[in-house]
Amino acid sequence: MAWIKIVEPEAAEGPLKQEYESALKRAGSVANILKVQSLNPTTLNRCIEFYKVVMFGESALSREDREMLATVVSQTNRCFY
Image 1 (cartoon, rainbow, N blue to C red):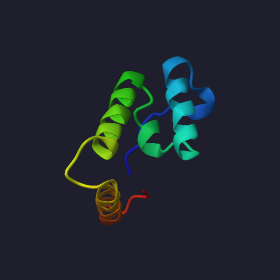
Image 2 (cartoon, rainbow, N blue to C red):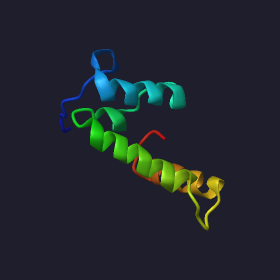
Image 3 (cartoon, rainbow, N blue to C red):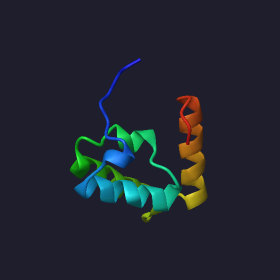
Image 4 (tube, rainbow, N blue to C red):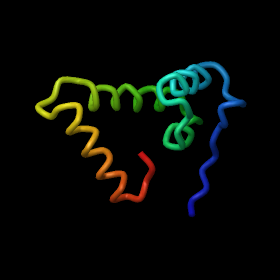
């Protein structure tokens, strides 16, 4: 298994702390996929913005279809979604 240095929520400062606080409000926890990007808060922010566009932006797919696809892909990859 790979080892990636991360910043835990209780050690976060500045922009990273803001991203973690937003994650807590949005999902109730800070997902590991966010923590692995913690050494570069700018990249983390851009990934979250990309996610929001993909999941909530204009699309031929409904919100439900996008959630279903995300769930199936996560299950296939044995990831928690």
